[in-house]
Length: 350
Ligand SMILES: *Cc1c(COP(=O)(O)O)cnc(C)c1O
Image 1 (cartoon, helix red, strand yellow):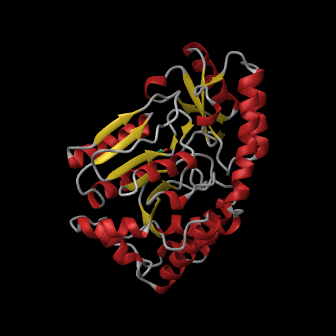
Image 2: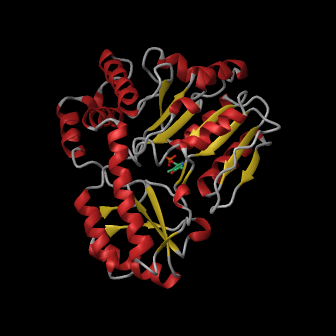
């Protein structure tokens, strides 16, 4: 089976060897306070920054998931109120989780077929944007994120890039907080999240001064000064991340590959297929890493059933598009020949 599910998805084939190496080299039982761990953690952070082009003064933290990052941000970075700009299920969930903690989160949903509008906010002090909305296959461009920042210079800008980080180029300097988890574009097994913060975000954390939780940003930061975590982390996944980051090309190269594969899918759905359409109509808002394909409920069912028999796992539709869409991951770990095979398979349904 090849998983085109947009997370967890196909892992890099090399992960098999890395797992064997991890077992052989006793990575599985190293202590998270040991020098070995500190070396592993230091190297992983440095590779992440190098390969993904993260500004040198940003700090990288190991957390458990993207969902945990929502909670860390809600507890550690909001002084008065958070503002949530979203057009899909993950952005909405982020808003809801935050609202359960703070009780006063503000939601600004926007239409799936329209671009996010970068307005100047009038209240609050933290803006939340889902860069790649995994539920409906749309994305917010680097340019728009920068505009939001420019219109709201006093706000902390937090960006959920869970299903795009390590797949496309992100302009990290344009926002203060970025996070992702490794089961999407990193091509790794689930169980590890990555959170990145600018010096401005850390300054905010000091002002808020939340120290009540094991994952309070101040505590995470305190431990990360020594390349450690407050809790026992997923050392195996950090090791696998290090190995994958050693082997991948720099993000501008990876991004080029993802873009050209995406273009092929776009041509397929826009010009070759009448009955299968990308859910987002405007090319400028389409995600390059997650495709949401719309068709009739009957056809969706048929395709998913036949796909499973042919050895493909497709992503289910999400939320209000549950029955009339399916999703295809365009993540870097998926092999070119696997995409060609899936395209061949889909030809019989166009
Ligand atoms: C998958 C996903 C999440 C949740 O990730 P977890 O690792 O399960 O916490 C959050 N946001 C987006 C945009 C996602 O795609």
